Length: 387
Image 1: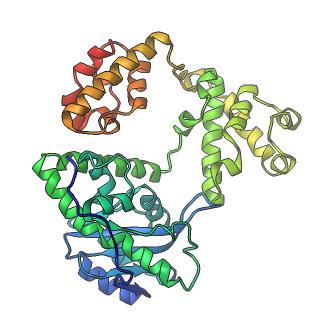
Image 2: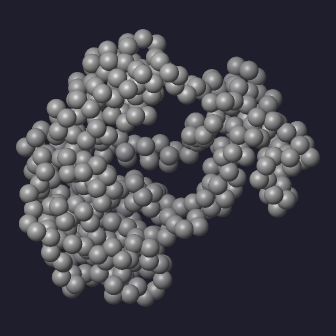
Image 3: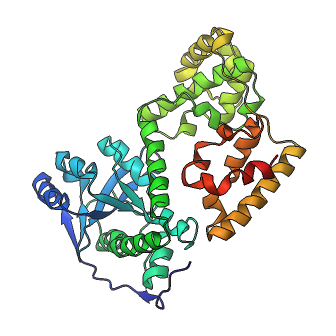
């Protein structure tokens, strides 16, 4: 069901905002925010050459006329803010929260909760899958928001008035959107679905915070081509790269590319001469990282066969692709009946996962994403369609 809106209009350029500087000012506001039912939030950061986002501003709106712009460069005591972010009685509202979660993981070592993501909610209300904040505000409130400061330098000081206005607008409209979305979702009996989806997303980041990167090799393209011993090497190399990237705060591919990891795992070099024959490993990399790479390869190669990973599923063959298409057709019909975007009900990769496991029609092969609220709408029809 689409939300009715008024014709879009430009938003006034004098949106009220207050810059929060220093520990005392932040603590005073946090005491007040602890009593709120919800807070609309956003972050601005820089992440052009780093692994982690570096936060330049945190925006908060408590449902009033003023957006509060917290300058993190002036804060040393985050205890009151941390307590508020973890308060289960205060819902934190974001739009497309993934990068914001990464900001708080890096800056404050926490995942806020509970969280309500208006982009996720919009998909469940059939307002658009992956809709931008600007488009959602236009759709629901008839307001045109500027986009001009998206790639600004948020670590510069002082921030320009244009930057401050842009940052304030990023949370000014969220409270009204949240209230309307929750009203519509409750009316359609889908509010719990959205909260489940938001909770699942937070759990993904909580897993990352544990520091367990043992499954990261599964995301490397082409890993399915390797045998079990080669996968043991790739697994160890992927963990090493992840730790290196985080320690140096550099993008993964700036440490070493996926293709190079695959080649090292495949050829299992035993000395610097053999390692130097791997494509794209420059002299500087070999000088600084070569011995460590060889040590990781040797350690993995020495593992007993019982500790090698299992072979990864091969790409779908012709018959499996036909079954996938039938599954997608079933999903399309169910999504249309529910008034949901197809991508909300089931992603293609989830169906592929079912086909690759495929021990029959057992429900336990369903990936976690296809359980929960989705399960009654998918079983047994999906498995029957792909049989």
